[in-house]
Image 1 (cartoon, rainbow, N blue to C red):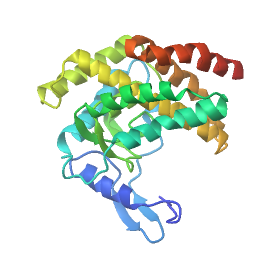
Image 2: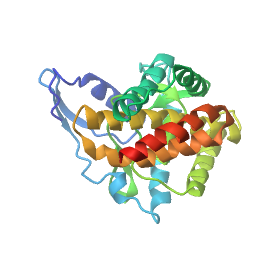
Image 3: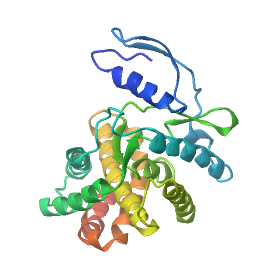
Length: 281
């Protein structure tokens, strides 16, 4: 790893790698570190990420490996002692603002009414904060899980880990911005993982409540992701991410239509945002 100190701080990566490896999570071993110059010598996990390797026939096997690692992350790292920042209300709201600023205002040239933004933020933030709080990788998706031997998965890009909602990494994995699955398969994976969390008493809510948490957490994450994809295009000249916006918007559209409390946002989405987006293509 070459991380110039003026632009990158290697301390979180080194600290969280130690935290994850202490509970036997498969993260790259750090053989040597020169933090003053920003060089780390890391174990090589190869070049094949989950996105490259997963398909219909092996998805159950590979997702089981991903969910096994996620369960270890959530059940073995003590949140009171891990020294991670918290996914609190200000951070959640800042992330939601990325969608408003970069996708709506700068890409589509439309302002989302403040009353609508406030209503949506309240619903999503309350749902996130009422969930059990666990260690959260924060980018637990198919591009950050590397396929190792025997269908095991190595974890990378964990330096932004926080303490946050229990469904965050689960929805990052199962409603991935870079690939999608039929709803019945997602439902099966979510229910099986819920049963595992329940058996270990990591959640006491029922399945219906857990699914609502999962859906609304996904909405928060996908709004942020669409905003980031627009920002990468407009600010950073990284336009390849534009192709991932339709898939991510489809998640937003589906969940917004599913819950009555999101009716106002769903209407604005259907009548104004989505038509403008389609016209821009």
